[in-house]
Image (cartoon, rainbow, N blue to C red):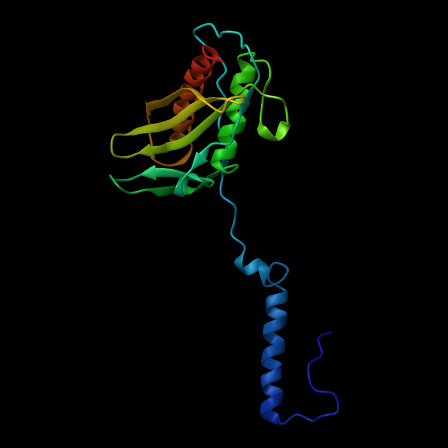
Length: 212
């Protein structure tokens, strides 16, 4: 039972009314979804994943060393879990209430590692795996969105292969893909972004395999 008041002190009629109002409000808040937190909690949106590259039209060469895939760098809206749509040139917005299931750079890193594994790349890992590596793949997310400007989903990733022993850049390239998008919102938009990413991931694996 909720008790309010000052011990040993009698309250006037006006004070008693104020305390009754406070007590009533406190009980009301306690009953709403387990407390005040229940009033401000937002319902989570739909979480979406990316697919790694699975099939390769051209043969994948055998690696001569071990490769570590670093987490991509990204600026602004790309360094988060928001799924982006470009409604007009120079504008970016978030797709509905959907989001990536993880921060986009971390999610891309995980799916790139899986892409190399699917191509049967040996000795592929992340920096956190603490393996001795010969080469590092450094990437930068530049475009990862669906665009209403031309009705396509677009992915652009800049990549560098670095010799871990010398610190020199062995090769660098910008990979791009654009695929038609049937919608600018919802699962259809995300599916188009995913298809563009798979194209970039496939080409990235083939390119790195010819060098490492």
